Amino acid sequence: MNTVINLVLPFFGLILMGFLAGKFLSKDARGIEWFNTFVVYFALPPLIFQTVASAPVAQLTNWPFILATTFSSYTIFILAFAIALVFMKKRVGEATVMSAAASYGNIGYMGLPLTVAAFGSTAAIPAALIFCFDSTLHYILVPMLNSMGKPNREPMGLIVQKIIQRVFLHPFIIATLLGALAAVFTLKLPQPVDTLLDFLSRAAAPSALFALGVTVAYQPLAKIGGELPLIVIAKTILHPLLVLIVLSTMGGFDPIWVGVAVLMASLPTAATVFVMALQYDEYVEGSSSAILITSIVSIFTVSMVLILIDRGKLPIDFF
Image (cartoon, rainbow, N blue to C red; front, side, top):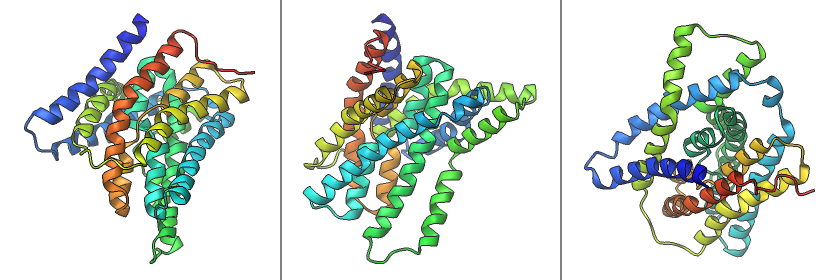
């Protein structure tokens, strides 16, 4: 239990420090953009690259794990979309962003540093795989469905072009692909370059968590609609539970990989969902509230997952 407390308190302490800084220090909100730029483009990618590059190639092609985690995210998305569309009578575009809020967690900013802190650097491998394929899934579903819901649809070629750009130009995905190539061909970087990447990697976790706190501080809490409880329950409870059930039913996975997958699924709604909402002008205020509320709830869900893992109570193989 002390191990969990020693991990959880510093982790959420960094987020809280960023949140308080964003709330009470009189700084221009645009300043966080440069901090986010450092985290997204310069700190987290070296961490991903170095970990993936040193991994056995077999771990990078663990397709049962990839299919299980991606299927779970897809199932939550489709379930939330069907409920929003059929029972709540939402528009297609609005239902799409709501579904992303229910299924797309903060697996980059929050997930990567947390899993490394909880399980060690090797945890970055399953975490990076989850990020790549979950992000690709949502980068495909959201623009496709939003296009279908608009009266003036964009040409399919333009939609596909945007999807490819968003997927393959994301710095985390680029870092993963380059790391995989380095692992396949056993490439070694020059020592000065490797040292530089090591410096940046060490800054990744604290910078990302502090930046996350500041970002949450700037998220306004809008009017809470009847769909918000569905989003919160789906993201923080149903998603990790489904991941655990699917992986446990399939069986044969490394316990650390199962723990990483469940932990990643228990994370709050990604700030990227708010960006999507702004881009398509759908469910903007609701997505902001979803990010804020799920971030608060995740304090308890993430802590509970860590406690279960620490006590060896996470059922990694039901059968």
